[in-house]
Length: 149
Length: 149
DNA sequence: TCCCATTGCATAGATTTCTAAGTAATTATT
DNA sequence: AATAATTACTTAGAAATCTATGCAATGGGA
Image (cartoon, rainbow over all chains, first blue to last red; front, side):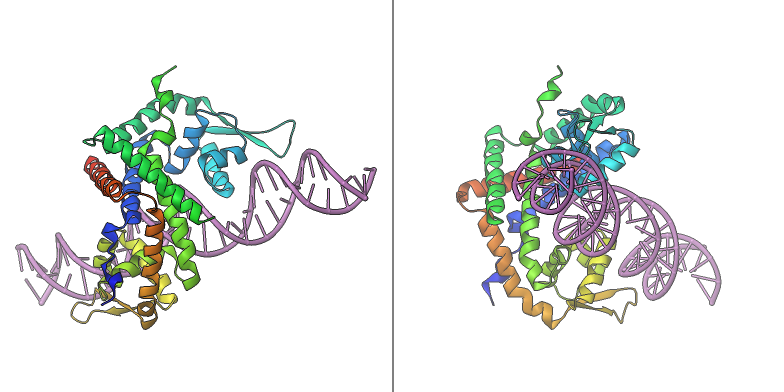
């Protein structure tokens, strides 16, 4: 009986993180759907609410998605009336992404939703434990990113 | 200036969890690809290595995916020669999922890969901090699942 | 000025996941 | 026994993500 048999998913950090991630996503998706916003649009909105008018490349970098993903998300956001694209005048390759009035109006309401989800997730967890959690999970991400070169 | 402006993604547990999850996934994907195993097949293999011969429904439940997801994963696993499907004799609705010899041979090697990723992710983190991390993240999942009814 | 490398975005195609709705086998109810 | 409800899987279609490749505008060097 190889020792590997004793490496059950439930004790693996990867699985714990995955479950929590999926729980966050499900809840977020449900809470923002009533506003006509899809999860894939959320991350972009969140960045644009702070940095309106970024180019697609800058936006991709900030959101942490590949550029083709951004293209797809922006297409749906344009269709949904959340953004407008505007070719830059001084460099015709660049496309500036601009929030519409509609998207701006959604800002406070939706950030409140996000805050609510975060609060719910942290219920009953001591501030000190939460701080420790953040340190550990950030370190994990660093560790994993470093391994990938 | 609304206070909501001060809810930056980087301080949100949801974002921290998301980043870590993606780092785990990327690394896993790269490490198992050389064996001809895709990420979507991985979770099913992991369960089947312990519980070979489950029905699709039982498998879905254990893996934590919806049944149509299972159908798709199993189809690709069958194509890849990792499983065989066999209709149950006493209940013709059920399909038993059986690992091939090839999938069984991959077991120890791939569990080693998984172990390696877990180890890498936990490098430099004290055992006590890790234990606290597990408690916190499990509680978060519970909190979020409870909110969804 | 003309060529070519670089930059910024888009397309193509694959994978992973979901919800909603369909089909086929079994079990329960009248 | 005939019908209805349930169970097990499948299909259809959408969304979110990736890698690899293509195209068009820009800018630097011969």
